[in-house]
Length: 113
Image (cartoon, rainbow, N blue to C red):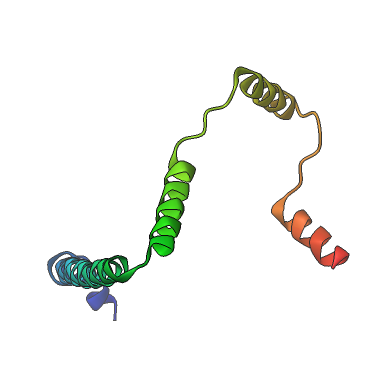
């Protein structure tokens, strides 16, 4: 048994790792192709919906897309908000206030339920 153990580094570097690397690359390429095909079908479906839609549906879609774009814009904090966060961080780092572990929070929630 021990003499086979010494073969592991040779096996791992020359056989197992290259095989797994090739397998991983194959799986990623396959997943990318499937995702690309799926997105292509989705684009075609949405294109048909838009072409056949009435005005109210188009307006609703436009509002929806605009809403999504607004949510993705970065949120800028005001100077007052930044100062408040800095003060809270200073208090936290100084050990003031209370903090709880995740386990304590879960226990507290299960007691309340």
